Amino acid sequence: MLIFNTTYLVSDKVHGIWLKWIREQHIPFMLDSTYFSKPQVARVITSDKQEGTSFSVQFHVLDLQTLKRWNKEYSLLFQENCSRQFGTEVIFFTTVLELVD
Image (cartoon, rainbow, N blue to C red; front, top):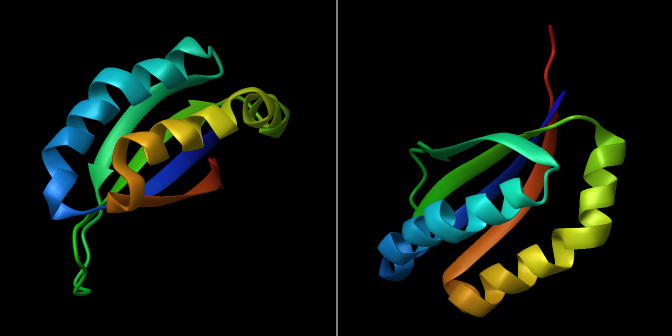
């Protein structure tokens, strides 16, 4: 089992709108693809001075092959959705985490 993590830096100007978008549009979009489960949204706690707030949005995914299929089918749409909605007010990067017993 893997965790597909996207870390966002969200400007204070769009903070509320972004949270609503994550909950009402992005999470349902990801779950509707049927590749992901167990969504989580967390604020990143940091002592570093930054403009805006960082968030981690995570989903469980079965394996790398499943994630590659999702990337092929949906990743461009995911990127376009965020960019169209928020432009440069939200920047993000993704990481893949492996659960260790």
